[in-house]
Amino acid sequence: MKPDKVLSMLGIAAKANSIASGEFMTEQTVKSGEAFLVIVAEDASDNTKKMFRNMCEFYETKLVFYGTKESLGHSIGKEYRASLAVTNEGLADAVSKKLALITTE
Image (cartoon, rainbow, N blue to C red; front, side, top):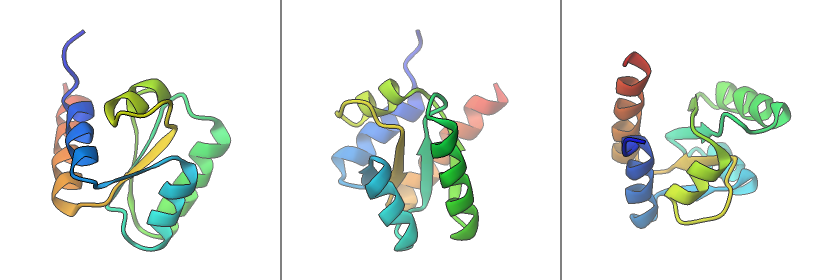
């Protein structure tokens, strides 16, 4: 398995204290306007995906479905995480660029 640049960027963001993770914290961050990018695990429940899809649409926050709960959690040094928000604009842009590269490969 090749190293995942998106997940390593999330690790950097976590070290920079620019990640809100877990459903409750992610939701709070989006609603307060602090989230620049929300990532929801592809294996999250349909309810979770729908909730974040609607919320991010309403608050005009970029939303991406990526990775698994395990890989997202692991990348930020936690257990399983179905959702997380990047709260630093520069880091969110960097993660978005890496995601764009992966989805076009």
